[in-house]
Structure formats: C-alpha cells, structure tokens
Length: 418
Image (tube, rainbow, N blue to C red; front, side):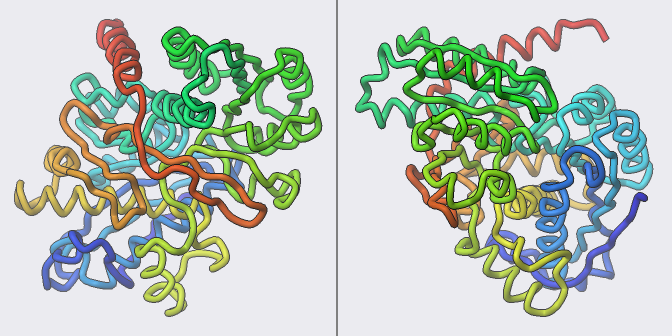
C-alpha cells in the first residue's frame, strides 16, 4: 500500500548544508521527493534498508530546520519492480509537486525515462538504470550521480592490473553475469579494456533470476580465469558467491560490482566468504561523520525509521547518499537560483556540485551539464569476515574508454524515433 511520510524531525549533517538558514522548517513549502521502490517482490532484502537510510537522513536534515527553512518531504510508494506501477507512481509524484524522483529499479527507471525527459523531471539513478545517462547533454534530467556500471568495470580492471604489477597482459579474466540487460551492458567495456590491455576475456551467463548458476560457473572454471568478476543484483549476487565457493574459486581473486552487501553474504556464511572483493561507490560502515551524526541525533533519540543494526550497512549508506546529494543540490539551487524550488532549478543546483564528498561518504563528486555520473570514481573493498576493509581509496580509471561508450550509446538513443 502506498504510503506518504512527511519527515520533519532531526538534523542536517554536511557542513555545506548546515548553512541552510534559520527559518523554521514547517513555515516554508516542503521540498518533495518521490521514492517509488520495490518493497514487496524482488529486492525485499535491500530496499527497506535503502529506504531506511533515506528517511533517517531526511530526519537529520529537517531536525535542524531543513534546506534554507524548507523541510524535505518523502512520498514513498511500493512499485514491486513493476513497470506500470512505477509509471503510476511517477504520475502521482508529478501531480503532487515532486522536484526529484528515485525508483532504484532499472526496468522502472528506463520506462519512466522518456516521460521524465519530456516533463523536465529530475530522476536519480544511483547504481541502476542506463549507463549512458551519464551524458547530461542527451539525458539532461537523469542523474546517475555515482559511477555507472561501465566505470565500475573500468575501476575494477585497473585494480586487478595494479595487483598484477601492471602485467595484466595475457591474464584470463572471466565475467559471470546475469543473462539480462544488466549483465550484457558491461560486455562492451570489458571487451574494449581487453583490447587495450591485451588480457583474455570471456563472459558466462546464468538465467534470471539467478538461483541456478551452476552451469555458468562450471564453464568459467574450465576457462581457468586468473580473476573473476560477478555481475548481478538482488539474490543473484548471493548465489554467485555461494557457487564460486562450491566451484573452488579463490575469493581474493573474485570481485563483485556494487550490488552486493552484508545481507547477500549470509547465504554462504559471512566468515566463509572472507576475501571477496567489491567495487564500492558509497562508503559503508559507521565511521563516516554523517552516519555518526544520524546515530547520535536520530537513532539515539528514538526517531529512526528501522532496525538500528542496519545503520552503516551498504544499502543503508547508499540510501543516505542519495538524499545527501539531493539535499546539497537543493541548497545550491535555492542559493543560486532563488525561490521557489522547481525541477529546472534543482537540475541547475545538482550541476553545481564540485568535489562534493559529504566528508568521505562519497568520492569527490563533480556534476556538470555534460557529466551526470560525477567523475566515475569508486574504491575497492574486501570482506574480512565481519566488515568491508578498504583496499584502494577513491579513484577513477580508463574514463576515455568509458566516455567513448557513453557518447556512442547516448547518440544512438538520441537518434532513435520515439
């Protein structure tokens, strides 16, 4: 059942946003953000945690007076990963005056994209959606905001090359991925990187939803990879890790895309999967200042939106990051474009972000009218049995190859009849 929550308790953390002003939050018009997420069908293990992070951060902001006196208001809907329900939610958000929407679903965000472009509505596609939406010239109101799958792939290959002391030439790198657009979308970047760096690359696909991967992993084992990359989402990632163990892969040479978290590791056992590597686009853990502020001012005050033990987990921090970016964009928009805040003004505010990291919650992020992914930075972390340990700090790699793909793909989208 769709629910609408107006969160007006607790406080703003990022120093830039703390200068929001002294007006009392409930005296100004709310800044409305629509979040239609999959609470009930496919991503039930991650969406509640992601949404919890969003709601707790909004509480943090509003407790200190909002953004220049304006409270943030979340309109929360369950779309069940269903395209039509997502479109219906989008129409509701638009009618209720939202200035930004978030779907956390590639099928739904892709379906909504043409409508949002026509309406001038901002869509945040944090770790999902189209990789070529990084091109703000073709997708002016679509904001990945963080490293897309193509940048994640490039960064992981750079990390592997560093571990091989730059002697990646001739190494065998396997991709084990879900047989849908998510898995196939990264093939071109790996192929381009293999051509430049002269490593051997093979892809092995398993059928959705990813509960039966044995055949793909047996084929990958016969290939004899030096390194293996796993590329899926939801429960499929957990099954990939379990199958890698069953097939005898060394997990310190297995790396996942961003879509794997603490709850995904429970399937195989958290201690058993020690050594697994992962791309990380948002810092996990509780040591980040914004997470510490939430614990002190929201959770300790009994105003948290969910189980306290979820605070600091991967999906929780990603939810926080989505609202951190939205809040900073809104602040910059109001400061530079004036009242009232509209989708068009928020777009300009988001494109004013410069080296914004929210005290290391994010890599230094710069959004421009051209680059809506913010530079393509991430870091590589490794699971030690209880937590993620940083192995390389924020960096970006091979962005020339990434942007060559982005430009070619976005040009195809632009030329397609609609």
